[in-house]
Image (cartoon, rainbow, N blue to C red; front, side, top):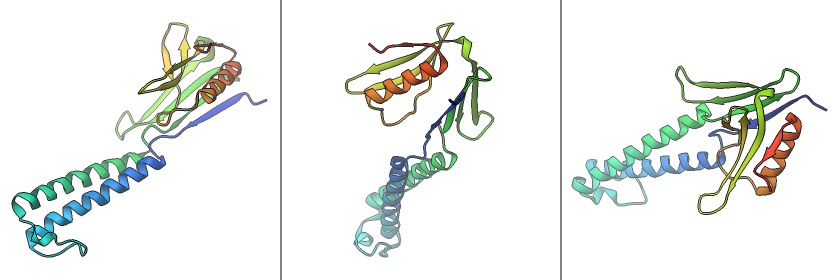
Amino acid sequence: MSHVKVDKILGSRRFSNYWWATLVFFGGLGFFLVGLSSYFQIGLLPFTKSSELLFIPQGIIMTFYGTIAILISIFLWLTIVWDIGGGYNEFDNIKGIITIFRLGFPGKNRILKLNYKIHDIQSIKVNIQEGLNPKREIYLKTKDDREIPITRIGEPLLINEIEEEASSLAKFLGVNLEGIE
């Protein structure tokens, strides 16, 4: 039996982010080229007659929307490249330490690394809320009643998956499990 358990946390490098960054970029590029076509009175897009648009007001608005969409796509691509939110949770029974590691935006706080002693953990808490905005979260609950979230962001796990993950973690750490009836 292994005495170290590591859970990888997928950050912004998920398929949906690649999809939206690409879609927003090409949509914005289309708008931008239509605006430029109306300004220069030439067809930059072969499948449209955008050179026939008046630059004021349609062309300038298309150029503005295209520029904003391209800037948003650049932001999305940078979050993917920097892997914002990515990291791992490491539970080490030999050293008695839990390490939570996440990547953030570049700067002095790029790396978030939190260490907790296993004997300071009171329990593993599961929070499941159904409805329009469902929440399925696992927390480390410390003896001083702090709750540290350790679940991934994104698509919520199935209820049986989150219960199984929480119970195996509680068993691995030798602590109680809260929130599952």
